[in-house]
Image 1: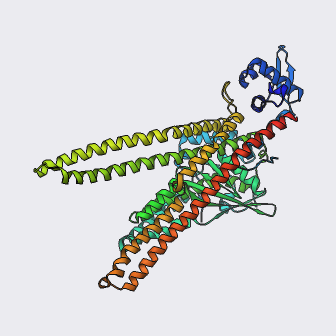
Image 2 (image 1 turned 45 degrees about the horizontal axis):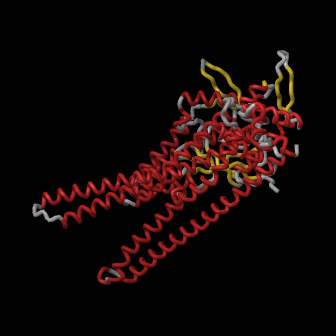
Length: 97
Length: 476
């Protein structure tokens, strides 16, 4: 998997962050996995990768289900990706090296 | 000049569209500082509260007290259409007095509507922020917006567009706008003037376009001008604003490519029809002479049937070939238009994304992979997508040929008139044709250079962007 052996897959990370950003609050793990459209193994590894970097956080609710919520760092990371994409789509050079 | 108070485009004036628009405005938090809602006599009303001391758009009488949207702007509308009726009557009268060129007087209202930049007012915000806000607001109502340096061009409907310019002034921006037309709108106007005879009726599309432009400015630009500033809730770097901006731009590119390819398809079918008609005529003549039947009537009928059969066979086969050539590209572009339009609507109405469907970021990335195809399609479209240049070239070529037709007999046969006049007409005709040729070559060279630069730069930037994003995530 890219997340452990090298670079993470951009699209899986972006998908997870986007779904959590849209949710606006804690989201059940299973719902997030379905929304991200990846299998459980891939989902678990990317979730661990995101948790490790503080992009998302785990919350345990009263019903003992683990829920995932996007952090400020996660929102900022997603905002940065969207900003670059926006500049690219408009034909402006994002500050590329 | 005056400004309308109501919004009367066909699309916007139906009760259902008013209800939808009202609901959108009510729920759009970016407009919250300007809009309050109330219910009176069972009908919802939007009230735009103006601010005193703000610049004069629309005229000062509108900027006092509160104004309900939509409001009855019948005086403005009646005035505009009465003026249009008078102009139409005047141009028809001139047309009758000086046929057919008297009708070209319609060029005057056309110039008055399309050439000036009308001042909209002052807003306390940087030009980039004002244009970003207006682009966002227009996209929220599914309008197509093209961003240019210091201005935006908004497609309002099939014919009408508007250019809005923001120029920096101390502490803010001066907004102005210009009436503009879509390629279809320009096509209609140019056609009316090229044919010359129906030129007086160009006043009707001119007024329709002008009316829609002013209505759109009244609805979208006037609120921020009256307030003198942008809504506090609007942030250009907000994620949703940027997603809408990207989707809107992708949708515009896809739509323009789709329309360009569809126009080429229709043009190719038109050429097939013309060739078939010409072929039928030549075959008919040829068989009329070649067939050996002594009965003239039977020979004509046989020549007609044979040439018709051959023409139909050619037309059907060529039509099918053209269809198979264009259909895959048209369908592909249309699918992308549809996908991006759906995403745009979903994003602006904040609907959740269904499980299994790609997210907006995924969709944008896949759409950006299509960009080289869209560029290629537009590069093949040629003059179809630039009706203004097309019109100038056509007029120059047309008059160049006309002058030569008049001038050559005078030059060669002095008995017909003065050879000096003939030489002058021929020289003018040749000059016009050379100018048209030069203009076309220059236009084509510039367009090819721009498209090549876009295509070459795109793949390099695409790879660089992906590396940059992946490295960014890795470094978190």
